[in-house]
Length: 234
Image 1 (cartoon, rainbow, N blue to C red):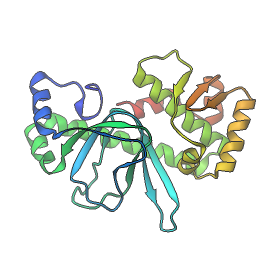
Image 2 (cartoon, helix red, strand yellow):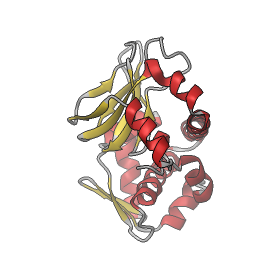
Image 3 (spheres, helix red, strand yellow):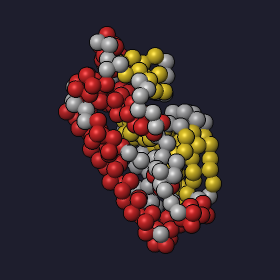
Image 4 (cartoon, helix red, strand yellow):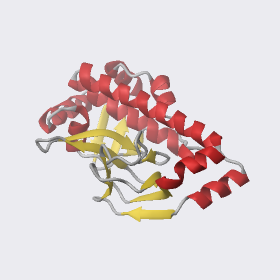
C-alpha cells in the first residue's frame, strides 16, 4: 500500500521513520467500530485491508453513511485532534489497519514536511469526494444516485485491484447501506436496483456487483469517470 495514503512511495529512510512512528498493526472483525462518534480517538489509522463505512447517528437515531473507505484510506484525522470524533467508523468486513499515535503526528510532520504535504493532499481529496456525495444526494434522482454510487465504488475497487477489464467486484453492502448513504428508503433502493437490473445495466447477486454497461450507466448517473477517479485516487 505504499502508493496510497500516508504510506505513499517513500525512500528507505522515510519508511523507517514511519515504521518507528506507528505503534503497530491491528485486525478487527466485521461488525465492530474502529472508533466511535463523540469519543476522543488516541490513534489514527491507515486501512490496509477490508471495507469500512464512516457514519453519523442523528438525534432521532437515524444513520447517515458519509463515505465508504477502501484500503489506503487514512482514518481518524480531523481539524481538532483533541475533540471527540465527529463520526464513527464501522467495519463492514474483517479489516487490518496500521495504527499511528496521534500525539506524535505533528512532531513527525515538522521533521518530515513531505508527509505533511501528503496529508494536505489527502484532506483536499476527501473534501472533493464529500462535495461529490453532497451533490449526488441533494440534486440527483434516486436512479441517478444509486447508479452514481455503485459506479464510483466499482471504479475505485477496480482501480485499486489494478485490473481495468473485470466487470464484477466484491461489494459487501446491503440495500440498507445504500439507502443510508443516499438518503433513500430500502424500498426505493430495491425498486431502483430492480429497474437497473431489468434494463440489463447492472446486477447485485450476494456480495458481487456486476456492471454490464458502464457507459450507459455513467450517462444515466451523470458520472464523469476520469474526474471521480482523479478525486478518489489514493
